[in-house]
Image 1 (cartoon, rainbow, N blue to C red):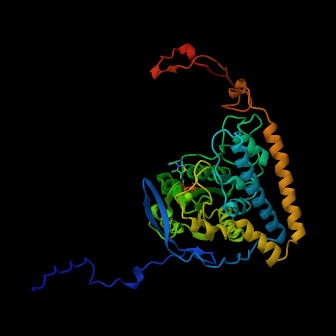
Image 2: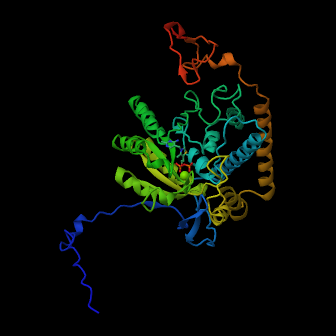
Length: 424
Ligand SMILES: Cc1ncc(C[n+]2csc(CCOP(=O)(O)OP(=O)(O)O)c2C)c(N)n1
Ligand SMILES: [Mg+2]
């Protein structure tokens, strides 16, 4: 049989030119991890449904130890552990409240991400600012909101930080706690926090401003714009990229092509760091260094925290598309269990009794806060108007209760007398 002629391989433009050594650039991404899980997933279809299976990767790898913190004292690490416990117990209380139909709207969980939220916010100082997202209720607790505040918020109670105007985590505190309210549009908090750092700079001080973005949300254009702005202005932004492997039902390897999201830092010209997001010590140390850099006016840091979203996107999502074996793998890396073992068995910084006492105290605190939240009244209709634009009543907005202006898809023209906002 005649041999088929193969077409000559096209010559690559620069194939003959050796790259001179001086043109080779190398970059460093600091990686704090003591293990580097590397799973690939295969998409499968079951009828109409799309699911995933683990295709490769060692699911039986032993759980690594926690990395020793360079900075945390025994007392500080126990405090972080307590915040993480409070974070988790509060979210399970919220789940029960939801099942009792007491929650208005949905509930988002940070299960498996407590070390990332609590240990990062713990690295902030009083003058620094925080911009939490939905999975960061732990950060919000560390920053001084009580579990009652958060539970009232989810139940839209009158006593909640937004006085019942929002039914999830859109609340902040610009006066005392330096917390910017989360913005649902993913990525939008990043330029806002960069702006906070710029504002502080204009007032003569460099501060650390910390916010979070997911593996999905980091694909947005505004993430690039915000972080690039912070980079060129040397603003003290600490951006924690929460790579929890899923964005809704999209696995992270369908979201980006780079191996590690920390590599994105190279393109911004800023330091990039990888931490195991289930190891509170690693999270804290990386955040502490990033915050110090920020306060020195040295600019932003991108920290990629690798972990796993241990529930569905929100309470309505049973996460059927996630391979069960992946859940099992990460369950063994539960951030609270790992820290508990470290404190009790490895370091012996907590006796079994002291640990039990601490857990009981957290539960008692939570029960007391749950009572406050459940017993808080719902807001009155009249309370919707005051304080919408300012707290002190310097703008008067008269409530007007009437029929809706739009009915059956038909617009009813507004007249000037319909205007109900009176500004002084
Ligand atoms: C700009 C924008 N696009 C889409 C959405 C809808 N949305 C809300 S959460 C979410 C998934 C986010 O995934 P990820 O960023 O990985 O965060 P995670 O939920 O895993 O913490 C999407 C697509 C949104 N809020 N904003
Ligand atoms: Mg995600």
